[in-house]
Length: 408
Image (spheres, rainbow, N blue to C red):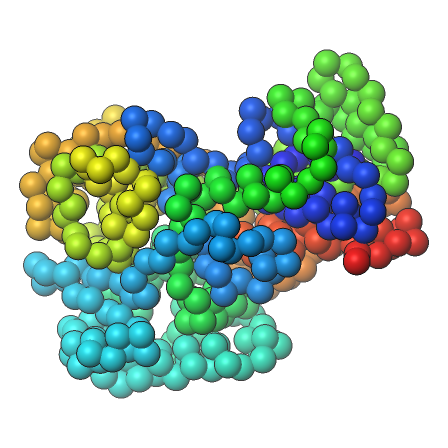
């Protein structure tokens, strides 16, 4: 039995089914996905918070069919707004003509960029063990590579704030190097039908009737669960708790609630595309906007044919009624476009978007709590799609091992 139909829970269920074990997944929401959901609004696809999928993650290919996801790629690079204009910093391996412009961009010395390239090469081709052998803060590891304060401050800190949801580069270097490895090796993308296509595909691989929605679990034990409606459901082999960190800690106190990072994502409909390519834009001058991107330039399916969808993220979960106006005004500067006619579609204030990963950071936390009781989720591995799916597999393996079985 699995409690929670997010990526971790669905992954655990899929691996259990592969081993020939019958599975029941209980989910309190009205759809699968957990934090990976997509809302449909007037022809727009609004992911619940800005999210990307990197096909270079090693775990998802075990369960996902990328062809069916119909992944739509973003430009491999970022645009940094600095000195009144946007500067494109692009991976020259994919766009050789951009090499001179990238080297000459006034966001750090050529030596600092060469140091960043050297680190990127090491992270791309080096063994994972070398990337995670020691653990310091991300800032410390960047400084050790002699990347230079200007490049760190104007580009990397601001870009990584959108990845880690913290602005001080305090995140574990172990996690940073693994994430950087995936950036260098893969192309961030979104499924054509939104990020929710990922959990939907995972759920579609389960036998019919395996997932019960709108079912809230009040108590768990190694032998089964009790729902808030008082229903008792027996588990034959054990229970995997795969809820979000807060829910998991409530059901299984041994699973401590981690410190969580927050973010607010604001969606606008623009009558004309303010940028001609799907490239992430970061603000190298002010700290209001973490990043912004024209989603419909990557996947036209994210917006109706008459408009474009702009996604913008701001650090923290904000309840400021003036935030949208201030963000839209800044977007006018970042894009060099008139934004007064943009329509505010929605704002998602996500108070618990990502677990904090501070050094010393354990890349693997135990998933087995006691005989017959297991916990999984990105808070048991790394705060990522990769981490959520790995933790689901590890929990399934632990349950099967206790039962004398194994994943096929």
